[in-house]
Image 1 (cartoon, helix red, strand yellow):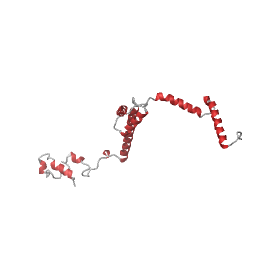
Image 2 (cartoon, helix red, strand yellow):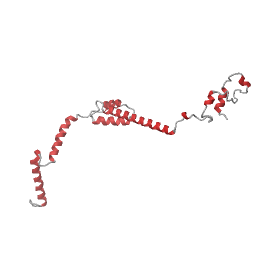
Image 3 (cartoon, helix red, strand yellow):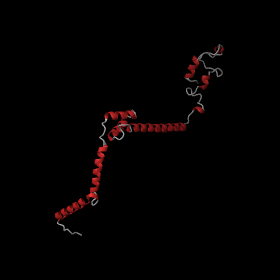
Image 4 (tube, helix red, strand yellow):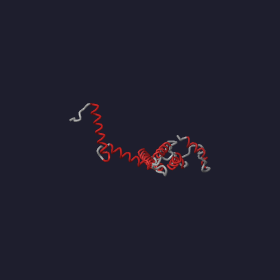
Length: 185
């Protein structure tokens, strides 16, 4: 039994010569194997009569391997592109080194994945105020840090005398409040 598609093809196919009508091969009739068209010989799938050639089929294992390779390649390319986009946004002039602008650039880049790194940086530079110069404050911070470190180490450096006085004062207050003697074991 031929498929509907094959019947339609045969119906619209023009006879090849005048003898075909005499032989009983009128348009729409079942064609003999000698006069069938090349399309009919290659017909597959629709009628189910001819199976596809082995070279035309893809094995599931090969398909899965190709999909996995494409997935890995796409993931690698995506990671590289995103890394470059973030590096561009965070390393741009006016953003790099400014904690507030870097945080804003990272936040904007993660919330707007369609923006390029250059666009993120330009938006942040234009709309986020620059932090105060950290260099002027770093000297004062360093001095206060060193002073605090000196206080934490009694008997060292310029605080040696003041540390001894503070210790004597604390012990005197303790003795006065508890009534303890000056010489305890």
